[in-house]
Image (tube, rainbow, N blue to C red; front, top):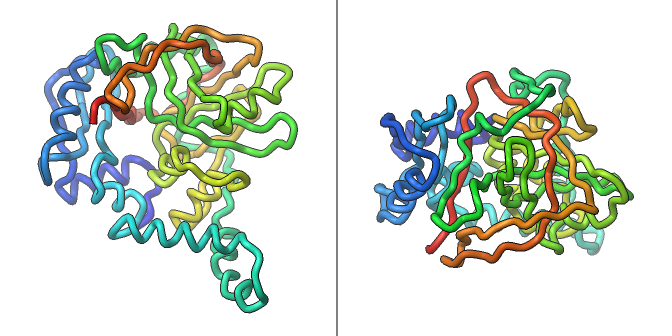
Amino acid sequence: MAFTDLREFVARLETLGRLRRVAVPVWRDLEITEIVDRVSKAPGQANVALLFEQVEGADMPVLVNAFGAEDRMATALGVTRLDELGERVAKLLDARMPGSFGERLRKLGTLIDVARAAPRRVESAPCQEVVETVMPSLAGLPILQCWPADGGRYITLPAVFTRDPVTGARNVGMYRLQVFDDRTLGMHWQTHKGGAEHEHRATARMPVAIALGGDPAMIYAASAPLPPGIDEVVFAGWLRGSGIDMVRCRTIDLAVPAQAEIVLEGWVDPRERRLEGPFGDHTGYYSLARDYPVFHLTGLTRRARPIYPTTIVGRP
């Protein structure tokens, strides 16, 4: 089944017995990570998604480990087993290659499905039920510090939207974001990533939008290593069988998924760098601090009662 947004997916996991609600108060620095680390490494049905309902210093729940098992990932993407997804993606990529007339005809169905997956522009959206454009602040978000030697708190499950300043092509990537203060973040896009390529072509401030939550297919598409030329928003629509609703940001000229939980709007200046890190990485070691671009917040929009989605990385 396709999901409209993150909360539909949460409800489905709860129906399947694959989600646990944590009602006791927890702290966003280190404590949530310690709990999730134990649960995510537990065998079988003990490994579940966790919804922390009372996070100290925040008025929204935190969803962690939502995609941390094969069955939950398959559920998120509407397949019974992940091999099905691989087979579908292979057909999609094959349909983009030249061939005989018969082969092209056979691929036509796949290409029609892609055409139907085009995003739809809407004028109002759940992600803009609350709009903050005058002195917006990150302070109310339950952003985690995962490991003791981390450089700070990190957003770890974002969909980062940029546009090529030359061609206008869209890119959506998943890059960690370190909180420097209530209005700036370290933008850790490595040089070979799409967002970094856009920044390298920019000659002035470049608009950037960061969407948290939304359809699980869109979250997955942001993280997927897609070939050049494939639009992640179209790919997400193709995965779910219908186009993603997109709404224009309030302070910058970019569009974001209408069903997101939280959206951060802002800009990156290609001439600006700041020390980001260290960060407890998926290798089980801390990645070293290095200079990276800086995201400046110009607006924050969200649902009236959002869920904050995140993930932890660290020693496997």
